[in-house]
Image (tube, protein in one colour):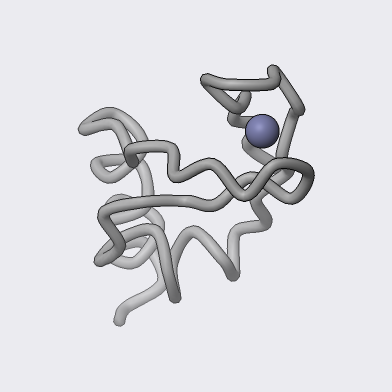
Length: 59
Ligand SMILES: [Zn+2]
């Protein structure tokens, strides 16, 4: 499953793979927009989902 986050500034959708979610989002505070480089905050829901993925796959 892929997760989409939308940039708060320009609305550009960014696709996050499970790998990125596990390796990066679980511990990151921000996710950068590919278009305008705006720092979007990683929401608590998104972080929780990333941790669920880690747990499921035995990190
Ligand atoms: Zn943007």
